Length: 448
Image (cartoon, rainbow, N blue to C red; front, side, top):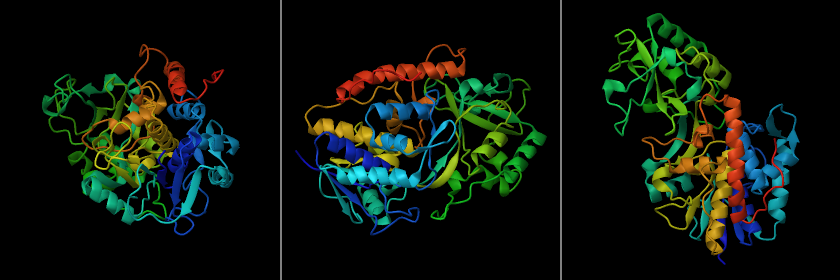
């Protein structure tokens, strides 16, 4: 039985090491702390939570809440640690960061099949199989070596994420469907885009709101470098009142069927999934706070009651162009035997990184043990977020888990909360056979 090398002892790396070791596979876990820390790290604990202590919503009617429940049922080390060190946080799952890190560190170091080594990894290890789980601040030397292997153009260092809204929260009376110059969608079907029109005064008020909105300050470890092709919308707004109208909000090639005229400016919404349950705001990457995003973006015509499935962001994050570089088991096509998990693979968030580590390790363990494991069902949150890594798009960006990653359920006239609850029930029911396939007993009851 080969030993697996895991590089990085953050959430994804610790989860992957634990899942492999629990299945009888020896693990060499390589972690650079305490010899070296990234600028974001402040303790020597494994699985250090460097930003927030929150793992977001806990309810099953929340996509990330469902993902956490699926991880619990799959035997996740990280979710066990979070539950054991939980602190009051209303409807969210938040933890005591010091206790959380200590809890994970104790179990990893005590496991007889995990050997922890403290050293900086400057290149992809020669040992195979190997899992790279070095996170959003992967060191320059290792990132350069990875870039040489896969092509530097496929390795990014900054997220530029646009917000996503639920389709059924868009006021269809105020918008219309049309692709620019009536080109239709890429596959020749009906117009792909929803258009939210601004007149002159409305546009100028929107620009003023963008300029005045509260922004997220760069973190101490971020050397913020904006690229001209993906500037935050508020940065563009600062460059001049009409900059957005000649950029992502340009109205050329569009005609409002209700007036027969071209609007002064337009926010275009592009489908996020084939079922058209969610749309992203094209070109609307932003550093506004979530509160400010909710307030300002709801002044866009048609989005007054918008439900945001994901807010926008621009921040430091090393990640791969997953759909082009990874196979279905999260293995590098260019380097067989090298797997990538966590944020480096192209997911966003603590829970999603944990999920990527868990699924990657469980499927690798299956291969090593001669009992291949299928991917989690597409109807589950685990299947949805890892399936995102294979979703071919013109410009791949990491994502938090959203309901748009799962196939839709039922009639769209169904109340939203009820539909999400039913989707969660379906997910947990479909998860059971997968749990059986990975040797985890089906839980006797499900939460209401």
